[in-house]
Image (cartoon, rainbow over the protein chains, first blue to last red):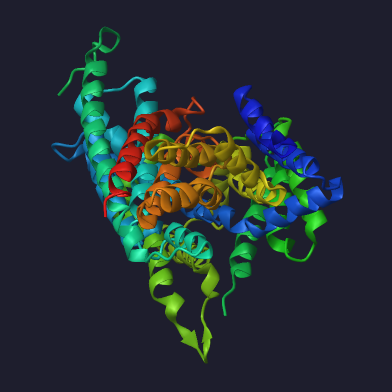
Length: 231
Length: 318
């Protein structure tokens, strides 16, 4: 039972809003010590695991390119492009992105999106611009909500798209877990059974984006934003 | 053969560049904290394979201490004004999208084409690491395109990367540290303990109870671990296989596929999935740390309920 102390540290640490990095490192040390490792063993295990997971941080390599393009006006251009589209709304932009992201993930093209590469430089500014185009200047709170939904759209679309691709890691993991327990399933069966949930994710997100647009319209017409004329 | 170490070296050089630029930034009150942090990150990427586990462990603890106790600050990196950006965007037009789209295009080309190329019987890329290697190639290709098109000064990409990194700050280290925590959890046997608790305490005497325990357990354990991949083997061997498949005769493929997707619902709800839920908060400069999770929560809860029903209806119909 002591093994679970690390989880207690994580939950408590996040709850009282300590620095998450500190919380996670302390949780790792506590878990290792509770499992009977020596301090040197725990730190070594942590170091080894950290080193083996360096590929997780490779994504930061895109920042010099994205930053450079922002310097030369990429986000501005993305906004301009959207403001020329007649029927663009924040919700519709995110719906289109959802469809593209989910379909491409379903055929294994997972690297077509992502937060540093796509959401920050392109999708979030486009959704914001579309929101401003249909509702006039938006209060900061509303802009923040649009940006949060841009990130959420990327996550939901990729999560419930990638599992349809038969060579995706999770399908291989399911297959090997079941296989090591003497149960054989084919990747094709697994990917087929991911489709109902993927379809529902699509329906739910589309409906939520329609409601999101409606809410934006209402917020823009609220008394505190009365000067923002809906177009 | 291009190994992943080449990509790590590239990232190491970038982090080293950030450290040097931070050291020279007089506008940042904590510039030495930033220098040390990015310098250590660079050391991990450049030398992590040779310095040994214990040194790597001390290195990460040092970074955590710097970041955890407010050692990181933010300077005023030189970038363009909004007016300059308007002018530049008007001048360059849609050409600005070319380097941005070069990253995914070249990454895909790497993963789909170059990953299958062999030179003299040896694969061009390490077949186990095609994703990070392809991303590295994509970034190089995009940088080349951007330099040809924009003719920036040599330091501009790094300065701009530093501007964005200072906004992300300590969160940049969080996904990798969480991955390491997952490994330590696994070493200590956290999963087995939780699986044992679940089967011991939950009333699992009918199909619906077993399906609920499995799907909700996947979501909850994923929230704790930040990753459905860590939760699946535990929950499948504790509840999914013995109860849903063996006792109640359910379909293993339905159990596996929908069980994993229930875990993904948990991923949408937890700050432990930092690269999905916290990194965008930093990148999009959102004030509420949980803004992305809040935006995802209704979808995650609805889909979790849907998964319970789907598994209950389809797993036992054959």
